[in-house]
Length: 473
Image (cartoon, rainbow, N blue to C red):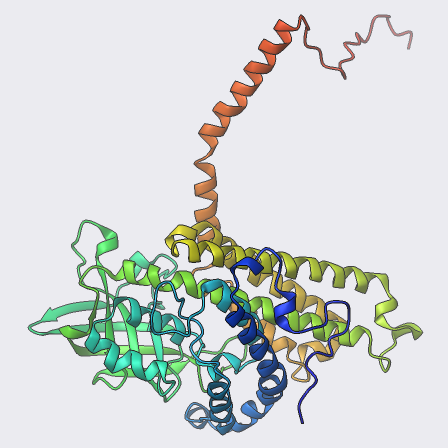
C-alpha cells in the first residue's frame, strides 16, 4: 500500500516541482521538475518505509556479520529506482557526460528529498562517498581507470572509499598527511594508516582513493602529496576496525581505520600525476559539500515534520493542552521554518554559482553552506527531540540517529573552523579598501557641509559644565 506522500497539509501542499523557490525556478528544466516529483514520491512512499526494514535486515549479530550484510530491500529499491529513471543524477551536465543530464542546482533540489531517508541516496546510486569518488574518476581518470572502476561504480555494482584523514596528525590541515608513498620501479609502495574511511567497512567496497606523501622534499608543501587508486584487496591492506559515531556503527557502510603495510600499487593507478594530490582533493570536495548540505536540508525538514506531528498528537497533552497550544513550541516551530528556508536558499545559491563556473568559482558560497546547514539541522533536531522528551533521544524515533549523523557534518569535508577561518580571512582582505571608502565618504561630507555653510554639530551634545557651586555638605 502506498503512503499518501502529498498529505502534508497547509497551503504549500503539492508536488515538489511546485515548491521550488522562485529564485531557482528559472534554472530548472522541465525534465528536472518531472524527475524531482518522481524522486519525492519514491522517497516518501518507498524509501522511508523501507529504512526500518533495511536496519532489521542488517541484523543484530556480530560486527563481522553486520558488516558483511547486504539487505535485499536495497536491491529491490535500486531496481525500482532504475525503472523510474532515477540513477546517477549527481554528475553535473556541464562537466560530465556520464551523468543523467542535470545541473548541480537541479540535483541539489533532488538531494534534499534523498536526505530524508537513510537508504534513498544509495537506492538511486547517489550516495557518498561514491558520488565524489565517481567525480574523481570521471574528471581525472584515464580511460583504463574509468573502465576498470568508474563503470562498475556507475552501474552500482561496487562501492568505494576515500582515504585522507589520519589518526596521528591534525588532518584538518591536509599538508600534515604522513602516509609515505615511495616509488620502487614501476610500483609505488605505501605505508601508514588512515581512519574515518567512510564506506570501507562494506564488503562491497572494492577501490580506495588514497592521498599520501609522495614528494616530501618538494619546497611547495602543496605539491608533496599524490592521489593513487588502490584496489581494496591489495596485499598489505588491513581494515583494522570500524569507528563508532556517537554510539552508532553505520553498518554495513561503516567508517574504517585501515593500515597499509608495504602496499605495492602499479604506477598506472596514479591519479592525474605525482604531486597533484591537492588539486584532485579540492576538485572532489567542492560539489560534495553541496550534496551534504542539501541532504541536510532534507533531514531538517524531516525533523520538523516529526516535531509538528508530536506537538499536534491528541494523545500527548501536557497540562491538558496540545503542545501546539504552548507559545514556546510555536516560537520554536517558526524559528525552525525560517532557518530551514534560509539554509535552502543559501545552498541553491551555491549550486547556481558552481553551475556558472566550477567549485573554485564558488569557494565562498560553498564554505558558507558547509557551516550554516549542519548547524541549522542540529538546531531543528534539538527542538524536535525536546518536544518528544525521552522518546526523542531513544530508538523509538529517528531523531537521535539523525542528530548523530548531523553532528558529524560539522567535521567531515573540513571542520567548521577551517571554513570560518577561510571566510574570515577573505572578508578581512576587504578592510583596507573599505576603510579608504569610508574615509573618502566622511571627507566628502565635510566638504559638502562647508559648501553649504553649515558648521557640523552633534545633535546630542550637552556641553553641560558640572560643579559650578561649592557643595555645602
